[in-house]
Image (spheres, rainbow, N blue to C red):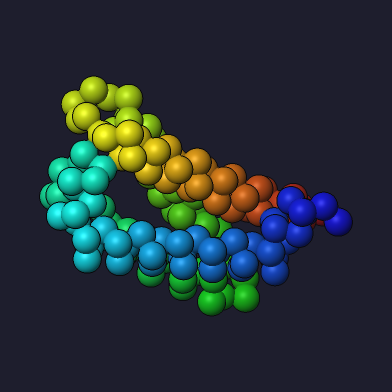
Length: 137
């Protein structure tokens, strides 16, 4: 079984969901506790960083609750995937939009955030498709 097949299996999906919830928790804590210093380092508004921490808090609750389920709900997974894709788009928009001027560290932070959530979203999406294919068989 390939790594992708392992990560999109039911057990693998739960590991991906836990990784999503834990990484989201770390980012949430960082954004809520250190919005001021992060703003200076990243060249992003402290209000934006703080608000994103609260948004992530809701996301982490969803990811964690899905990770606890033996068979995560399709609707919950779809919402999580949409949230990950939206986060990636927002990161790229902040990076390329021109309204803000992130520092080089801020640019790297946004790029890493976008790539990380895209990988998580793709694995979750593949698991959803795999579930649908399995249900049709």
